[in-house]
Amino acid sequence: MNLRLNRRLNLRLRINAGLLDRNDLLGGMNMIIIAAVYLGLCFLIALIGSRRKFGFWGNLFCSLFLTPVIGAIVMLASDIQPEKIEKCPNCDFPLEKRT
Image 1 (tube, rainbow, N blue to C red):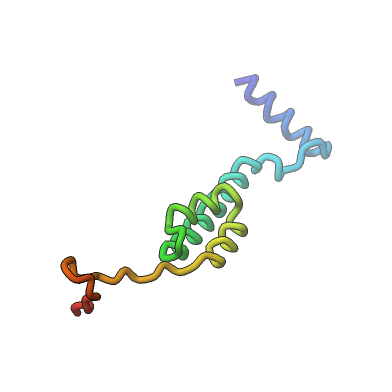
Image 2 (image 1 turned 90 degrees about the horizontal axis):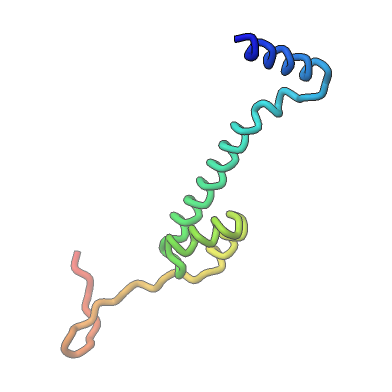
């Protein structure tokens, strides 16, 4: 108990003396928030780019490893995937979509 009180007093003395900023105490929480925003942006870019040439996973890994800004540029620069046209297995004639 005495050691705990001593640590608190020491911490308060360092804060009051200007040796330690109150924001330093929240450093871990700030890192968690930054990581959550980073991963959220990467996931958003991957969702938007899921119909592009790289697909969901390609855009996700690109934005995770290269930063979301570069991932967004790569996603916007890639082509949109063409629609797959069903063809007749016997004559390769394109089939119409059924609604």
